[in-house]
Image (cartoon, rainbow, N blue to C red; front, side, top):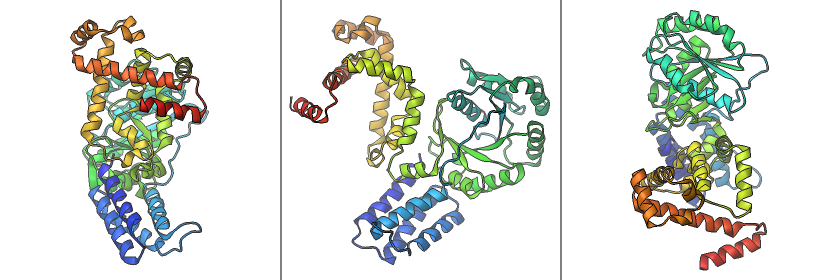
Length: 445
């Protein structure tokens, strides 16, 4: 996520940290480095100029009590970047009155329909009843996509493949959505914000009377982001933004900063293809991740969504008894898979974002998890519960059944044995001194 921007700004701050003293020359170099990093990430030139001016003005301030001039400057950069990207996050609060109506707008290819599914999942995880109303009559596959997105979930899809009048479709859906906590209304897009799109959205807006109008914008639109955000805001009264495709090669800075320049805050980021890959946006936390400071709050939110409280309690009890088998390892891997990619998780852990781990190494680890899951799917219940019974003949059979190499299966067994050893090591020990001695002894052994 905005990898080059993060590396660029972190490099700049490292240069500042190594300098002997802070003078105007150093401040000018720092600002130029930040400008280069932002422009390389598609941020609008005028916005970069405004940010530079703010940093330069604040750099004249006397250092706060207890801070050195260097620390003061680093703090200024942190605060100004946070403000630049919209400040602290805006929470979508759902009132008791039903339904809370969210109208999604945007151009073709921005990912509105996918965003509607992710948003629905976000609210259902928080105990809300949700329906998605499909009003995109321009794209034939849109209705099918909505039905597919909610398949196997409690979300209600309201689609009408025969009706070409979006307002009529909505009117017919009103009785159904009145019983729901949240109604997400997906609309059609165009290649540009044309007069007919503005007219269609205006009619839908009048019929729906939405509580929120959210612009869905792709991270890959670059410098045109500001113009698009301003146009939608002026014509549709946008109240918030979802930026999609933040997981790809898109530089993303243009979309993020453009939204901050309007009065509509960024509410969510789409960070992957899975239905759970939607992150609540908070400028403060986001800048923390950019600067390699991590984002434990987002990590906790992901973990809570991946593991139920009941499952966590069961696992805790088993670990306290020193019990651990391949099913436990499998469940941990399932939870990790729900939480997102290994690379994204590392960004959230303080200090880990600064490690220059090669992408190939991260991809290899993620590939291993996929292989190991396939191997476990080919194991018997006994093998999963008592992995010690897996001998060379069983390894061969599992490899044949799963299509996973025998060496990879042996690697899985090795990982299990190491994890089990650690569980036994930690069993019943809450005294830090004793635990440290155990770990040292284990390391020497």
